[in-house]
Figure (cartoon, rainbow, N blue to C red):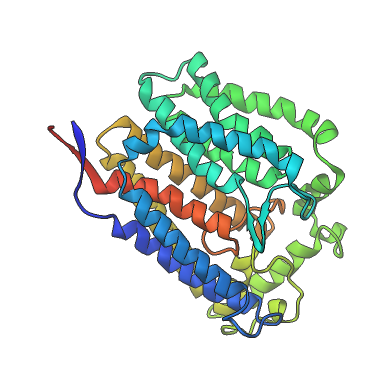
Length: 364
């Protein structure tokens, strides 16, 4: 059997480009007060990263995903080494050593490591088909857990938590027994008090408590949530209009071009704009899981499910942050939030999905 290209997966790319263009406009609006010229500010840089992301997608999806899987462990090992070096060589930014700085460009290795971890998990599970017994489950947990530990040590707890949906998605597909899931839930419940008293830092505890009562610290940990809720609620049905959001223009809403970009979209385009964005996300994820169903082998199925699960988790967490039902843990909204590393990593991951969808097996 050999891999042969049928058609380029332009549908998946189209979804990403639409989201990327919406993100460029939203970033331009969110930063307009500080950078009135969109051609020289963050929006211009976001547009440049979007073009790079498109190029990365185009290259990745035109290469046989089996070739990517053949090099999965080399990429995975290089990724782990890079994550391990970060705390030693990177300077702290916002309290975390998560970025390499190359002149004016910042690169966050934990973002492309998501796609690499999906690739490694898919390569492992597809190479040993059958029920996911205890031994294989432990090995899968080690594959997913190793980068999680290194990212948490930076510390970047938000990014580390996004790997959870990946593990659950591929483990469920591999045939994990329901009683094992129940056991894992019980272990997590028992570990929660230990994490609360011995792992979480005071500011992390405050963020969790703020979910239940944002007014407990309205000028501190609760400020972001309160301002985000105001922005979302004030948008109404059709919004205040582009570049007219008071929460962003008057500098009330922090992190508005990054983690809380959806609050800007909600304020300026209202329920209609948010519904459009969520509709594109839903269509992209459904297409990704449909690709998993169409895949001609286990590797392709695990790749598509892994990518879909991880990025669905990111979207869900960000929505929870913006609406105040989850703690503010620094998880951006894929493709829309400002940030080059996350943008390119998303196009890279969905490029693997595109390779699965664009190729088929034929007799050699």
